[in-house]
Image 1 (tube, rainbow, N blue to C red):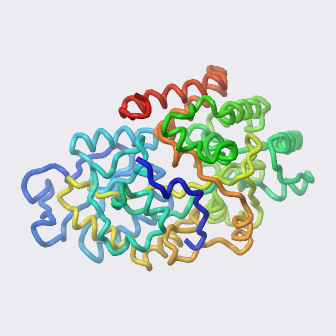
Image 2: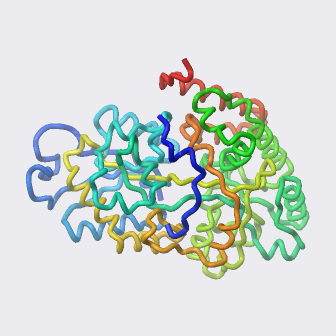
Image 3: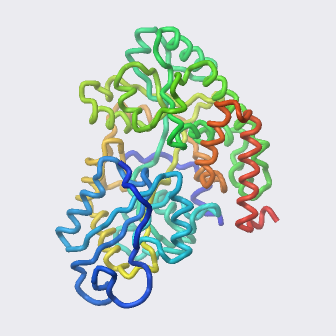
Length: 448
């Protein structure tokens, strides 16, 4: 299903502890108007005593706990509780599909968007339509499209467009007289000089499964420079993924850098949760992150002035020059089988009040902007000017089917490549094979 909005290059509007255990009960099974706790349903009047279950993966909620804090305020105001049930990132996509198909899903569900891709979790089939809600028209158009199918809105989302850069330690670059690299050859040269100086060039963390995949698909500007219509052609199966040369090139470059020691000795056991400490230590030259990651570091390590000490540049893998723009993000949906759809709508209305949107932005250090233009971004004038100066391109995973759905699997493939169990060509072949298999399982007519 094609949405014309997705065919545009979307500019950036800058105005715009894991809980152990899997999902428990959900309040979505049929029967009487009371749940196991004796709660009255939304059809029964008083909402006090109702508990909404909110299912999410780890990275679906801010680590600052701001959403949970807002939920407590909502409970104080309405008497409606929100029970957060958080699962590991790597398990969530398969788990929530099983829960949805079995009728055991939570009342509120957090999943990635956009939902119009054929390879997405089809939340339009499982969720309450929200098109008529007052707050819908206040969302930025690109974000609204990410939670819509055929013009009907099914969810709400909050973060602004995501952009991943290399954040770099300015002090290290100045001490070693290094220039910001603009291509892969220059990047390798910078890495080698940092390594020769006794520091680790790049903090990479593979154990979380997602971070190492970013260089492959955030560099879609390379694909679009070759053919502006390549995403549509890939979705129509008119162009083959194996014919995109940049995939193999970047895999070879990643493998080369790992073998050269540029990711350090411990990158296969590093966790993303330790990235803040690593960058604040001054022992690492660079890491891939959003600009807002500086705020997280500064919040946790105030002695390290991350906003001042960390600069940013576009990932130069494959000689890429364009910053990848991802207008989609984690979004919240209301399970249409829930007994508490009206209470869930109340929660969404609460979260989207301007004063609570502001609390969300203020309470999430890693977030620089919301997809709600009425809330001013946290970008400095310097950051704004930097972003405005960049060439922008849509990321692959949001616009090409059967990419995002295998993201964590690709992360495992890269680990296998780094340990020598797979070659870069093996990784390409495996990504292609999975994509074709997923398309056929979806009975995608372009593959028949």
